[in-house]
Image 1 (spheres, rainbow, N blue to C red):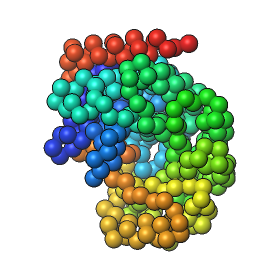
Image 2: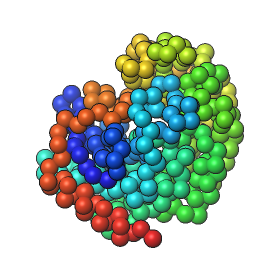
Image 3: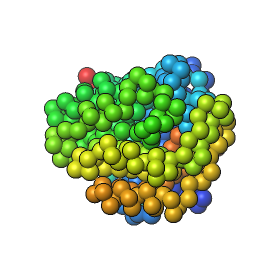
Length: 339
């Protein structure tokens, strides 16, 4: 893939970078993002990276896009990315941080790769698993420490089954599983893929992951406040009463929870900001039941780079020759471990 340009993220432009890539003759940009810190409000020694697994989302072609996602509703679908193209994003972003003169503190941070960009990783599992190991080998050559990889899915059962085997027998660095749940009784509207892969089956399949790995898989719950899709198909609010049935389905010994604010997208939906007191009440109830629970606020809203907002935005800045050379180096390193 060719690196085209980038945006600076954050009100003070120090939260990170969004990268735009060109893939074959596909008209829209593939996007990835590098964040200075993994979590807001924390001075962690971890850089977080968001990587795309396809150009657009295959769920759009299947007529099953998530109601709240810009990628699936706005971007025309191109194709799935290869393991080489997925790993290329990872390696390029780390090289850019390692050689960043403005922020030398980024050079020796641990690296966390989240496959949460464009596309549903569950439909690209074979390519993602190979990209993970290629990335691991390149990181070792570069002397970089991998904190973990995050494999995210909306519940594709076949990918979860493969992950359970690979996490014990294939991966050489930590890989954790993130399941996007968001709703129980409203999920058919929010995430039509639920009609094919019911979330109860996905959760049941994940029950023994903690026993296998010592790591609790993460359940993602987006907090909507009077969410309404522009096509009128979906109207929903994730208040306490909507979240409780999800908690009833889970054992706090086997799962941890990540609550995320919804980022409204003008072309596809409307939603009022979620009240902080309501969010705190939901999290306190979950914690009172014994769950490890956190509230996550996305980086990159102002550049449409936050969770659910990726839509092939034209980059503000054109990639320099230096960055093109860096991309060529990333391709060279990835090719070295393609076998």
